Image (cartoon, rainbow, N blue to C red; front, side, top):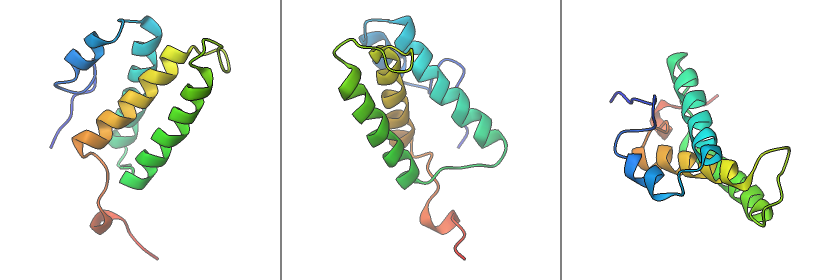
Length: 104
């Protein structure tokens, strides 16, 4: 299955449009998608566990920042975009399954 990540995953434009249309939100969302596309082009495929842990980590930071206080110069909308992008990747099923992960 091939994914297109130029303007976000297919079928997610309506989700992005439902948000305030914040430039910071789009920047956070697109950063995750660009990073995923870059890794995928080099053969890296994260496991579902890695994606879930990234969602948990980003969501905790967003929860702390959503009062409007920037963290590391990033707005809460940027953090929310990252969380939503990670969730979108999980929903699309882009994670490596247990059968494709090599065990030592």
